[in-house]
Image (cartoon, rainbow over all chains, first blue to last red; front, side):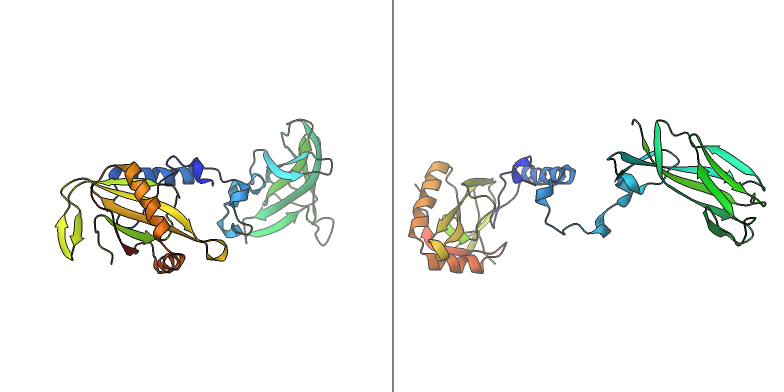
Length: 172
Length: 114
């Protein structure tokens, strides 16, 4: 940060100086200004900020939520990619379940992810869609214009599912 | 450890800003004269300014400062400017190398009281 942006930019000291309370206050004000200032890119040396010092949850793409999240990613057409986690609740018992994703101005989906969680008897997690050893043991997951659709041929009601949808929009 | 001697010019590494600066202190500071301590009986002023001495590879930046009872800042700056011209580069380089954040060297140059 350029020193001219400090509230008291011209402070200097030599040995034997005795600082007054006013001057100490000015130093605190300068420190405060540095803490609160945005730092221009050219003031940070290359490699000075390491990933361990970054709070990734402040990044647009780093927060999973059941609310729509704008990510830093762009699709091939340059459109912003949004992300939303949809809670599917308990999976169906040998049938099909639809859950509204409530996405407005949907353009199209660029990635569909999901998982199911069996709390009992043994905390098992499986990805969705799940490809089992047979069609009967598999679980399908698809997304339609207004719904997330999950289907299975056997009883999966003991599992709780989530779908993570990545998509673009026709308008923000 | 350096002690305070009024009116004696000190040489130090360059301070943060190059320009002439003044710092006032209330009376009652402990100063020394002929190794005897006493308390200042009036407000004191610290005057300081950075100077570049030498050219090319020998170019050296220093800070000159002194503490006095005299409040005439213009006169003080003139005195420091004049003093800087008397200092040779070798002395300046040695002083800068030996300086820390808290230690400096006194020169045998004194500001005479008006």
